[in-house]
Length: 454
Image (cartoon, rainbow, N blue to C red; front, side, top):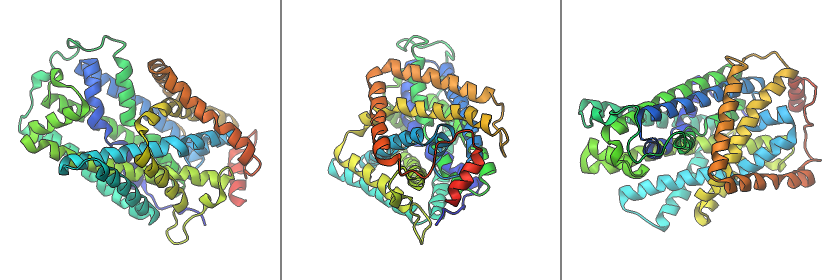
């Protein structure tokens, strides 16, 4: 039983915005502002990362139009480089990155629940695990239910951020003098260009996840039109929101008072709502993280589903629920591993080991567009500005990889090494059982049609 196409442009755009805008916008501006010490350079970093995300989203849009199947980056890597590289991407996603990010967000949500209600210790772990299992059940129960809830959460999230901006200006709770000097760095900030490294890494974290929505292409209506447009619209809206939100935070809290992300948000909340401001902001963060978690549990399991359908993962995971038409077993795998991470591990360090290799795979995916275009030039949707757009993205990715590797080479090497452990697993267990052969000079569309027919 195949997945059904139920998602329109509004739903997919809401998924892009809802998954990306999570806890990052409440935590990263503080570190970025403290490192850069300049409103101008903070704006430049947000715009630069917005350009990077938009150029990457445009490329992913064409890849989604060419291969409108569930699985996203896994499918595009399979079409460009063959099943071996695609398997390593799925291996990385399934074992560490996907459950690690899910667990991190769930614990972040639980910590804000604990702040609002005075809870600590084991109850917070139970709240985190319960949230993961509840949202996984929502996604198993139906894509329409999950996407509908996501649209409501996204609307609440954007409404809350808009309310903060409007209230800040109407009540004149801040000071415009906080933006002066606009370009010059404050005393105590890191010197340029060194200050750009942590700021760009923080901005990347805040933008992280836009590439995940392409994994739902197999369930989007008219995916060749819907997914590219939703990615471009969603990333553009996210960039504008991040610039506006950071500006409001700086309007409310001067740079010389910025210490950590949590205190930055609390200070902004107190400036707007008085002593209860911390709890108000906790509520906003909870809504934001719920949307991100829902999107992650909706999009990410499609990789394991696609792997199973290709024969490079256990066949049972490729089954679609007969009643709800969702990849229920794939969703259950992500929820179960994420719950174990919450219960037993310090997953923040684990995620740190895999940021480098995740960026590497994203760059490899966009580079694969050149390989696919050489084989099949025609497409129902073409990347705007090609070839400048993918080249620009790859240049920015290369710069980010250099910054990440230079900042912590041991983590980067360990992440690459653990992914490499997937090579013998693929060769010994799944290579002979796969249902796809590497794509050579054959037409991609013919290859894909044969796969569906088989």
